[in-house]
Amino acid sequence: FKINMSQLDLDEELGRGNYGTVKKVLHKPTNVAMAMKEIRLELDDSKLNAILMELDILHRAVAPEIVEFYGAFFIESCVYYCMEYMDAGSLDKLQGAGVPEDVLARIASRMVTGLKFLKDDLQIMHRDVKPTNVLVNKKGEVKLCDFGVSGQLEKSLAKTNIGCQSYMAPERIKGESQNNLGTYTVSSDVWSLGLSLIEMTMGKYPYPPETYQNVFAQLTAIVHGPPPELPEGYSEDAQDFVAQCLMKDPNARATYAELLEHPFLGADRGREVDMAGWVARALAHRQEKTNQT
Ligand code: ADP
Image (cartoon, rainbow, N blue to C red; front, side):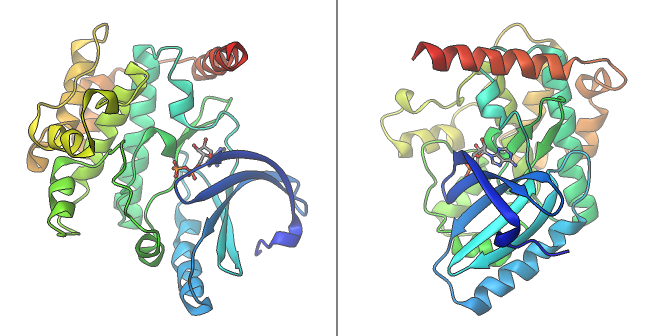
């Protein structure tokens, strides 16, 4: 079936990204709570139709590690994109209360499995791996969203915000600065994965803007400086896993198959991890902090 606006009851706003807002909605015919992302694009109907066609491959992106896609439509110059509602939000909001090693390994395992699925089954790379694009629910499930399926959509979203939090791999930053788009490959997503894991454990972006005089200095540090490391308190396996993701040379970086074989993820397999308990604690911690301010 096709989703359209008249079937939806709008609920609270869940968040705001670079390109639009995300609202919780109720799909009345099925009584399913969904998250609806609104992306404003100044495009004509034929371009918008082309984007909807490209988004259609998302119906094939069905895996336990991928946020389910329910459908998209456009009204005037806005694309509305409906997906599974994840009731604990994105990882960046859960990182304040600390991340034990077993939880970190489970998150890493889900992310690698999801990324490998996108690559092997859909022949796409994610292109935007970062904590805000990893969603969690109270059951403790961890799923990826916001990956690049639509060339048209990517082109239309002004990619001007290299921003103050770049998860781009060094080779990608170099390429973009030389206007050399398309030189990077799936291994660039592996870099972003490593950076996201470190951010989880530090509770903040690993190249904090306050350390650098400007965005240029920050990007220079990513391209020319040593890669960041996990803070103390994690095992050697964890340290090594992240180091394998953050090799400066993309050809030296681990592949998804290698990462799945790594002892850090080997230890995760078959291990009981109370993800739901961790999510509940992280949400409570966050609630406490918002109450204080
Ligand atoms: P960004 O551009 O930073 O990736 P998005 O526009 O994708 O941000 O999303 C903004 C915020 O909305 C996210 O940080 C997240 O907290 C929330 N959000 C996005 N998708 C969902 C979803 N499916 N379920 C619940 N919350 C979501």
